[in-house]
Length: 314
Ligand code: UDP
Ligand code: MG
Image (cartoon, rainbow, N blue to C red):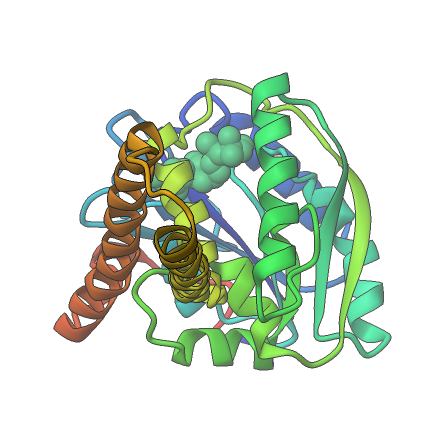
């Protein structure tokens, strides 16, 4: 038995509708690809038939390795579980289970890996999603790029081929709030983008709730930028500067001119504005405290309930 060269890693949450398409496309790819490939599927606590279907595939096809998590952990953690279990000796090909990331691109990604790149990340040329979501993503990626201390490429998600050594570093990174595309950039080595057109999901609805999407965005911002804290400091400093100037204006007015009571509306406005700013600042500190709190617990990132190991490779 040999070690597979490439592991294809795909997390699945309630994907019974797209699952048959996924297996069909992966099988066709593996049959035609000269590389030795294993597939690592992670069931992220699905409530539909996904786990059952995975089990059937794993038991009938020795190239499949299936991991079942104890409950829904969320995409980033499910993916982390898959990365930890994948044995590909040359690289890990990370895709979504809904076929929005065409697995057939593997040979092209592999070619770039072989040319000395450690990370080949996919860059979306076009998104086939609704207007609101597209605009949200567009603005978020640009905001993050402008405030992040790591160079995170625009319009690239988790879809990528990463080398064995990058995967090994990712596995060693213990952070609990995970923004994998940021962590991947942070690791460094030689990284290259590959433009592609993101397909529509093959079946079913998006499994990312709005809440999960916001959490991901927050993780990106709070884990890869000092901007929120700097924003508080700078706002405070600017407010102090303005108040000092205003203080001198008032004193001069009182000394040299007839003082009149004025500015009640302005006063009210300033009080309300700065109550808001203070609450925002508290919230920002709270975000960091929360992250420290959860990280300090040192809980395992994910809990595996069951695992069917592939039998084709070691
Ligand atoms: N997913 C997951 N756990 C979750 C939510 C999603 O494992 O809690 C998986 C999902 O099955 C899919 C991938 O993550 O394979 C991307 O999710 P989705 O397609 O719903 O996100 P979108 O493409 O709409 O952003
Ligand atoms: Mg999708």
